Image (cartoon, rainbow over all chains, first blue to last red; front, side, top):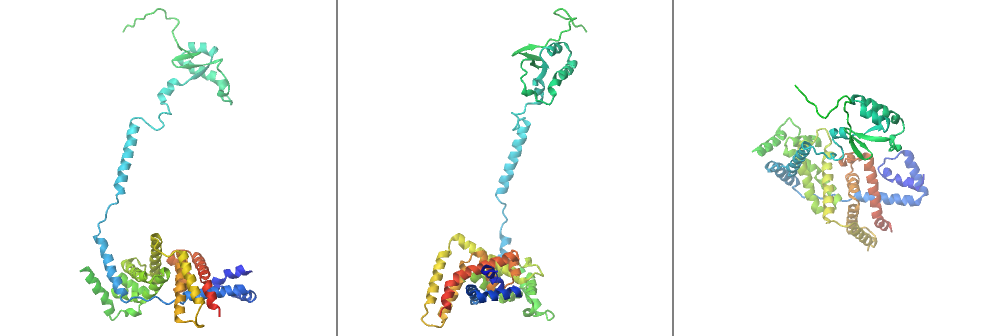
Length: 207
Length: 217
C-alpha cells in the first residue's frame, strides 16, 4: 500500500466505513507520512466546515403560503382546455396521401423497379434459344414444334456442364433463333413449316 | 363547496378522541392523512421539514432569496401530488427527491439563462476571502471572520458541479445515508459514493488555501 491507496480510503474513513485492519494500516501510514496526514486533516476540516454551516432560516407562514398555492395549482388544470397537438392532423393527412399515391401507382402498373424488370409475357417471346448452327438448323426447320424442345435440349446438353457457356466464343457455330423469327448473321428469316405434300398457292375451305 | 368539505374532513380526525394527536404521528402517517386531504397534517409536515428543505436548497443554490420560493414550491408539489405518495415508502426520501429535483432544475435553468457566476469569478471571490482571512488583525477568530469563512465555504460548494453538489449536500449537510441518496437521485449506491468522494475532493482543493492560512498561527 502507498500514499495513493491511503488517499482513496479518506472518504470511507471519514464515513467510518473502513475495516479495523484498514484503519490500523491508515494510522500507521499517517505516522510515517506527514504529507498524507496533512492531506487528511485538510480533507476532514473541509467536510467539517460544510457540515457546520448555519441552517438557513425559514420565513414564517411557509405552510400557509404553500397551501394557498397548492389550492390554486390543484384547481387550475380543470379549467385549462385540453388541446390536440397540431402535428397529429398534419401527420395523418401526409400518411393518407402517401398511401393513396402508392395505391394509384400500383393500379397504373408503375413500380419503382418497373423499368428494370421486363414483363413476363414479353420475356417469353424474346428469350433466345441456343442451337447447333449446321445440324440443328436443318433439324429445327423440319422437326415439328413438339419435337423442337427435345432437339433444343440435346443441343444444350454439352453446354450444360460445369463451365459457364459465356466463357467461350460460340459465334462461329451457334445462332440465335427468336420464335417465330430466326436470326442468322444479322438478318431475320421467317421459319417456314410447310407440309411438302401440299402444293399450289390457294386453298379452298368448305364447311 | 368541494374545498370547504375538504377542510371540514381534515379537521375532524384531530378532534376525534380515539385517533392519536397529530404531533405524535410519524411522517408516513401524516402523509397518509395528507393524501386524504387533511390540511392540518400537511401543516405539521411543513413545520417538521421546512428547515431541512430550505437548508438543502439554500446550500445547493447558494441563493437565499430564491430558496424561499423554491422551498415553498417543494411543499406545493407535495400537496398537489399527495395521492402519488406510496404508502410504506419513506416520506423523507420522497420529499427530498422532490427538493433535489427542483434544486437541480433551478441550477439548469440558471445555467441556460447564463445568470450565474462563472467558475473563474467564484474562484476569484474565494481567493479574496482567503486573503482577507489570512490577514487577521487579531489572533482570535472573530464573528466577522467566521461569517466570511462560511460565505467562502458556501461559494466553494456552489462551484462544485451540480450532480456532485446535490449528493454532497444531501450527505454532508443533511446527513442522509448513501442508500437513501441513491433512491432520491435514482442512481446506484456506488455512484453516490463516487460522486460524493469527487465532490469532497473538489471542495478540499478549493478550500485548501483558505484552510492552510486558517491553520497558520
